Image 1 (tube, rainbow, N blue to C red):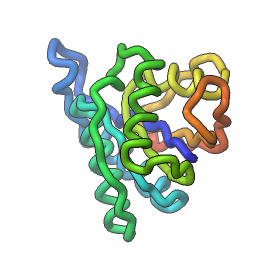
Image 2 (cartoon, helix red, strand yellow):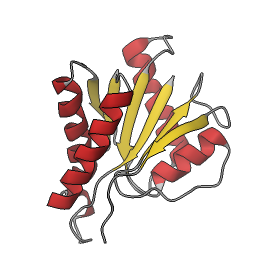
Image 3 (tube, rainbow, N blue to C red):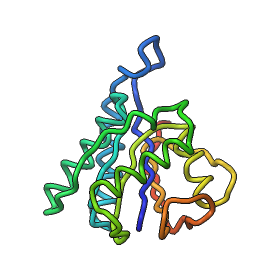
Length: 164
């Protein structure tokens, strides 16, 4: 199985309604760059998104590009992959969503679009590393047989343009 961990693109400034922050125009451009890279190199089966606007918007840009290139991934929102959620709970919920859709078929490619710091913490749990910062709209690809601590290996990454 391949898990693509994607951080959302640049969002509007922090405010009281963190969940409601939208992508900026620049963030949308970042999401498009990342989506193009993903679609050119991966055949997506499922896209999982955080319910926060900026991640949902990034994920829907990815879904649009996948559909435009003949891919037909499923799309699901998981509420446990927001910035301050527990990464172990998040990984369990991601595994459950994958199993619910595909059963024991582990030959799937799944994009997970969420936030810092949870995205770095989930990756660190999977590959046994220390949590490492994700740039805006960065994608890291992890190969694993099951979603379990220490069993993943990061095999590639992509970083789109960043703010100056």
